[in-house]
Image 1 (tube, rainbow, N blue to C red):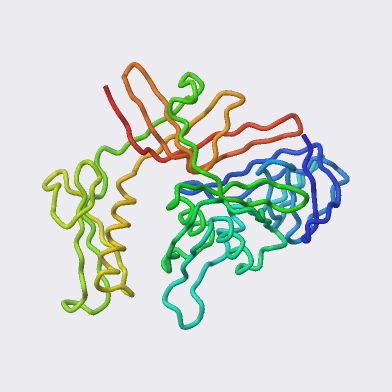
Image 2: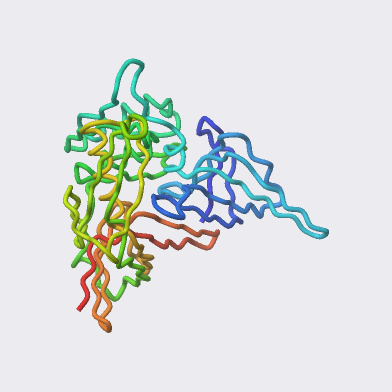
Amino acid sequence: MELIVADSAGRTLFNIADFELDMDAGWGDGVDNTFDLIVRDPDAPLPGAAWRVFADGTEMGGRVEGFELKTRRTSSELHWKGSTWSGVLAKRLLWPDAGQDWLTLSGDANAVLRQAIKRLGLASFFSVPDVDAGVSVGYRCSRDVPDAWTNLRLAMRSAGLRLDARWVDGSCRLQAVPVTDWRGRVDSDLVNFDLTSDLLVTNHLKAAGKGDLASRQVVDVYADSKGNVGTSKAMAGVFELEEYYDANNSEGDDLRDQATDRLGDMQAEGGVKVTVGEGVSFGLGDIVEARHYSPNVTVSVEVSSRVTTATGAGASVTYGATPGTTRIG
């Protein structure tokens, strides 16, 4: 395997055959959407700003944003550092136009991506196929978490889609593809998992909006043992875990909606590290099932991160996931 190095416009400069690459893409704790590339070729130059390094036909690679040179008495080590394709999106904002309260993404999913990439000024880095995805998207971008990575992936997710990225001819081809539900389609013996699950999570969220002191708007939302969120307390005493949420720019229905969404996200606490056998590959947002028979545990998860390690000899991928449903017994 070789990596291709291109300049900031995507023009090929040279290839790298002797390297070590560590990168991740996704969301959640511990995922920063960056890469660290050790370049072992002694003739390799220091990189330029916004150079691209990638393995053609894969998602491996990204935009170079810096380097680290480690020198010792008899050796040296050159690291190129930067953002993966998802990190490039995470460092840009989808913000409403002046005078507008919200930015809404609507239309065919691939058309939405083309419009967003143009809006972000990243058309030289990302390409989106001219063909329609065949699925419409209607999504209002968040003002609280306005980065493009979060909003584009959630926009696709709302329509049963996910983002797919592949490096092709010097640019990163981005497109919307259907989420694949792999349950029952992959031999469970090929899927190993490390499961952590919190038996108690925050189930009472007190959200404070506009106003001061006693006049401040306050909303209380609650979750039950199954993760359902509402306005009636379901867990009390030793089972109640409370948390405070400061939303001082929100009021009324918007404050309640924010609190409901935030508490809902907290109900998926825990994590799964998934390792799969050779020849099996999942996309970010795909659904995977893994089983263990003693104790009898079945875990259905959404793939939320891909951690890739690669050298000239090949690549391996470890997946992180958020538990969707866990059945015990």
